[in-house]
Image 1 (cartoon, rainbow, N blue to C red):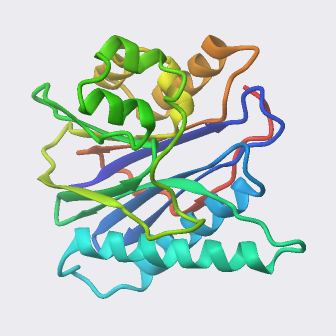
Image 2: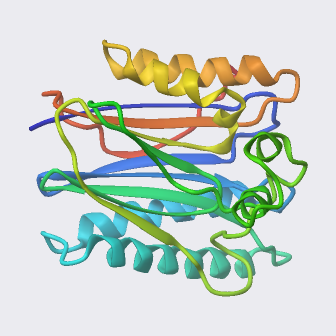
Length: 260
């Protein structure tokens, strides 16, 4: 069973694109990873790049099959965290770059993922069921404890303040998930928080539409930039559909220079 993979990354109205995305063939399976360097912190793009490079390199080097994909991803996140801290300390003067990260391994048709921060993973089943990672930010925590409702969570002023990152002080608290066997037609979507300006119904509706993934993810990224102008964020989207015959592209995707 093959996989169709598509990706898009736009700078939006920001001075630079601090998102990084990448994928790699791992045996008969595939790894996808996306990182969003934190704005307001120095060298967020460095943190994102180190995170993606570390995850891709470790996945290619790991023995197949993975004995415990969830534990493997969490261990890679810890390694990426350590490398980001070291790279920041090597800067002159030293800096503390931070990034979110979400990654998924699909091996023997089974998808397992891990994430830290508010970069999301959606799994849209061909039968209609939707699974989604939980954002690690203050607004989500307030919602989970019952202090605000779902409507307030979407517009809360602290919705962009992430509570789990790679880089900085303290341990990494990556959250694993998945262990889901993919059926033909199932779609995995990884995205930076720049896509969250679009209603989820629009995102999921686009993924349900028949046709190639590439124009779908490009259209979603451009729609998110347009919806947030003149203050649009970087927007990156990486998607996989099970059932296509085309082999996946490999390597690390460098962001578009164009704003949209």
